[in-house]
Image 1 (cartoon, rainbow, N blue to C red):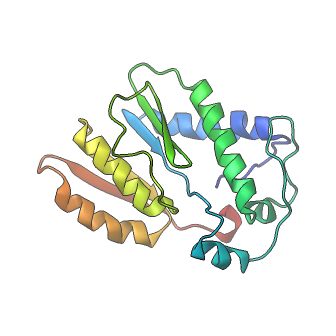
Image 2: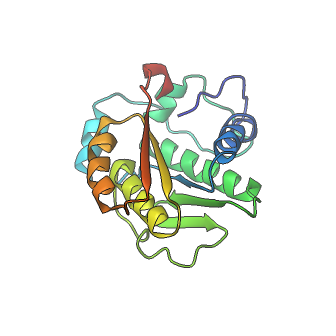
Length: 187
């Protein structure tokens, strides 16, 4: 997750950090899929996350102050869920590029701009981790005319899963992986 830097509110974070970052990524692509993790209440992964430590529950609204300890804020699943929804809404509202497509996960649903006609292979989707859901989005993009696909990740699982996706693509399609090492301070 991008650090808030000098942002004082979630609105500033969205407008000064998140949207400019996404805008930069959109400059070189025809479609951008933003795939978030989901946090299910009765999940096995939930107990694993709980062992990582406790944070404080905060409301994510435009005027709310950015928490002083970003890492602790991100330890609370409901904080992340609200943050993802807030950032998704801000990005969808900002996006107006007619020659590009924006696809964003929203829990089990998918948002797109412009509205894509065939999202049945993407939603509803109950994948908890973005790892496997990213591959559904990459496959969907490949099936709908996007022949050079880049998956940007910090998770080695995605690299392993992408091998199977590469076998499904057409011979003229390209699958690229950008693997970035996450720093503890980035989470």
